[in-house]
Each structure stands twice: as C-alpha cells, then as structure tokens.
Length: 337
Ligand code: TXA
Ligand code: MG
Figure 1 (cartoon, rainbow, N blue to C red):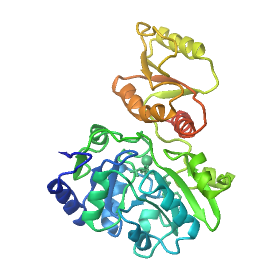
Figure 2 (cartoon, rainbow, N blue to C red):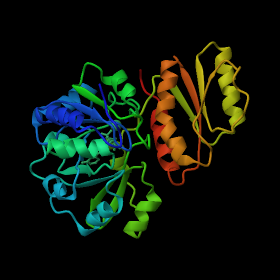
Figure 3 (cartoon, rainbow, N blue to C red):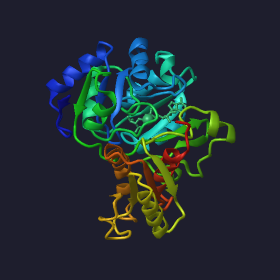
C-alpha cells in the first residue's frame, strides 16, 4: 500500500503504479466514486487476473477507464452524437456509458458482449495513473465479488490483501457510491444502474425520460443481479416502515440474543445508544448524497462489529436516493447461504 496525495499525486508514486499496470499487474486506486481494481484493458492475462482476484463471475463485465477524450476512439467504435453529448456533459465524472466495443479491448473485459462500459474518472490519482500507464484501464470496484464496494484503501485490503499487487491510498473516495451506468443505443438511453449522477441530470441532457431495462434484462443482463453489495449480516430493508417499527424489531432481535444493527438518518429516534444494538446514522434525511456516501462504510463497520441482522430505513427515491434504494434492495435480497 502506497500513500498518495489525492489532489497533487506524487509523480514517483504514480510512475511505480503505472509500471505495475504496464507489466500486467493489478493496482487498486481511488476514484471519485469508489476504489477501482485496475488492469490494462488491452492485456488478456491482466484482465483475467481481475476476475480471479475478485472471485468475480466471468459473465459480469468490467468498466474501462480513460483519461482523455481521444482514448474513447480506442475503446469504442461508432460513438453516436448522443453519447458524445453525454460524455461532454458528465466527464470527467461518475457516468459510465455502455457503447459498441472497440476491437482492441480484450473481449473478457465485456464478458464477451459486443458492448463495452467506459468512463473518464475525475479523481486526480486515477487520471494521472491512466495517463502514465498509457493504456485504457479496466477496473471494477475493488471488493470481493458480491460484497460492498470499497470506499477506502483499508476496505480494499480487507477484501483483496495478498491477491493484488498494489493499493494507492488516496484517502476516502469522495462520493462513496458507484457511477451511474447507462447504455446508449442509437437515440435510446437506458438506465442500467443508478449511481452518483442522478437520473434527473441525465434526462436534462437527453431531453426525455430514460428507458428502463426490459423484464428479461433485469434478471438476465450482466451486473443486474438481484443479490449484490451484500454485508455478511442479514439485511432487512423496510423502506415504508415507521422508524418506531425498526426500533421495536431491533429490540426483539436483541432479546433473542442476536447481534443487531440499525441504519438510520441523523435525527431519527435519538437516545438509542444504550439499547444493546449498533446504530449507524448515515446523515441528514434530506441530504441524500451524504447518506449514499455513508452507506457502504456503515455496512462494513457492521460486519466488523459482528452484527448478524441489520434493519435499514428507506429514504426519498429522488436524486441520489434512487441509488440508495437500489443498493439497499440488492443488499437485502435473501440468498441461500
Ligand atoms: O464507480 C464505478 O463505476 C466504479 C469505479 C471503480 O469506476 N466501478 C464499478 O465497477 O462499480 P463494477 O464492475 O463494480 O460495476 C460495473 C457495472 C456492473 O453493473 C456491470 O454489469 C456494468 O457496469 N457493465 C459493465 N459492462 C457492461 C456492458 N457491456 N453492458 C452492460 N452493463 C455493463
Ligand atoms: Mg462492483
């Protein structure tokens, strides 16, 4: 793990990391959304190592990261005027575009699809690293497959220590939640994953409502898996319940002897400190960016504390709230383990 200044990254540190990438190694690095686990997107064995290190399903495609607009032509073919408009509006930043895949990108990056997801991050460390590596960098979130995304370098090591070559520690990721993923197919922009860029902001550029993935895509398409972003604990998401109900259910679990946690907003039910359960307050109810950015770290702290069951409240689904609701739903889907 190498510390790096997030605003003015030390060129020597970036050079070392870029060298690892060029040799086919894996480097975890901070972005403005979450930490990414990077490899050279043009090197088949480097890309294979990402799937291995994460334990990732080979059918779940990766995002390719670029540092400059010129690199888009290397990664994709036939970038439509609408895709260009979206890139101009939101890059560098937290929007990922799914476009036709360019010939030089390793097919495994896209899990064999003829499309590729691409994004230009704004984080100075990410940009400097990609630029100096001189190649597009395939990077999923730097967590073990199906786990909560890493928002700090320590989270990366918790999941991936011994499996990757280097972590650049640039402090906590700014947003703390992943990019928004949309596909652009002709004039149709489809929301594949809500994230840090709001649907409202994208629609204001597109000029009409985003399409929703069809029923088949929602279950069968890559990365849209129901169960994802999961803490070790059972997560009970109660988006419509009053806070009093979460509190009484948490009390009942404590009475049964289970390690219990509860995810709330700052002002909810003050004075829960001596109830025998862990309380995580995600931020002011009305500040959805803060709540979204606190969620993954809070879930990881619950895991570290040995919590077995977590009750989570709902928030408004407007703006950044859509991503909060998506992650809590996926984290709460029952699974057979
Ligand atoms: O903020 C982020 O997006 C972070 C940082 C590191 O950039 N990356 C990230 O990557 O969250 P990952 O691999 O955890 O999520 C990538 C998402 C998945 O939902 C994946 O299925 C989708 O993008 N995706 C990638 N390629 C795709 C494609 N060709 N078609 C449809 N979805 C795709
Ligand atoms: Mg991920």
